[in-house]
Length: 470
Ligand code: ADP
Image 1 (cartoon, protein in one colour):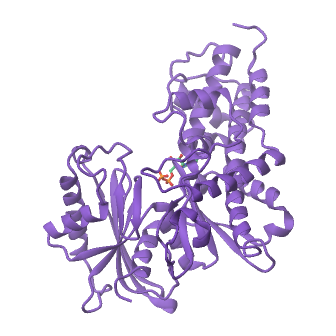
Image 2 (image 1 turned 135 degrees about the vertical axis):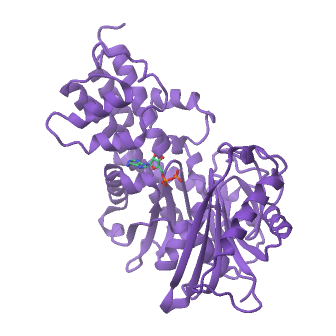
Image 3 (image 1 turned 60 degrees about the vertical axis):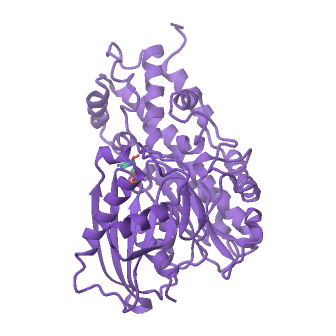
């Protein structure tokens, strides 16, 4: 190999290519606003895919956010992975708020993820029935009302109203026949009928929209919700008049939550050979580039690819065998986080983790290099996530001058997800980027808040604010 390549030359180049100076962050924020605007103008189309240059910008048909006055018993059902979660909440209005909650989680047997639509929805309905049969004295339904459900469904759907949406395709290991093209609310309603459960779906939402509703219930100034976990998405409250593709939609509130699907963004991102190779090897090459740059599923894998090149071409880790380090996804983002918390003089924890995960031996200077690689990828990710948030706020400000950044207003961004919650360095880079982009004056009006597990109650709240019974 080329004798001039050392871990240090690779690191220097990496830092250069991943740099996020203010000018670049400003451009990314501006591109995010522009791609949002383009996506709002594009036809609804058959799928969730972005049009040329535009983000999917999926209308949620959520036009009424919780006010805090909601009262009564509501349910939520969350299907988004190998578990489904059920929850009930007794709401007591402005003063009493959440009087009681209960929840349960049921894992979905592998064979049902590969079965028929009827079998899967029957399983879900019977889980819901079992949970509903265990209501205790803290919960009571008003006479003459059905129990209403907020259904969080985290697969691509073409939403047609607040309580209907056609499944575009299953993802995340599901391959259930008979559902694509069908209304998933109808599928659930039919299964409930077969099981003789007298409940009704009043709101169909994705988890980001439910998170916004959950956060907004406690703080009416929340206007944006962001998920930063394994994957990423963001949604926000848009003016109906700024959604050309909904032409003619009649709305009493004049607002609607839009799911940006910003994971699909890519315009102006600083990318490296490592990002391109990871993307090419992924199950969705060319897609979800922003997600692949900022979210938890990928940060560890990018670092692994950098370290492998440093080891193979620059002799990092001496004579260590590189078989394990060659294994995709052997380093997780929580591993980067654990290494970055090591403040011992000899970076002992870094050395142990590298040995445990990748079976490589390291000296102190090599461990320092590893930390610098982590920090470089982390800083890029957190800073770009911050720029994306500022892009959303700027788009909102363009629509409603003064409402977002104007004096005395308070605009809250609620963020949930394991990456944001657990990785202090990532969080700090995100906050720094938002501050740097907004400047001192505008920063005063913008609050970034951590919100935790708000999506369950959020979905139940949306069932309440979109209830059949006024
Ligand atoms: P999900 O996004 O899968 O629904 P979470 O919001 O809990 O669930 O996020 C989980 C993700 O958060 C993990 O895939 C991981 O990338 C990231 N994560 C979890 N714990 C940590 C940690 N200690 N440090 C850094 N990232 C973490």
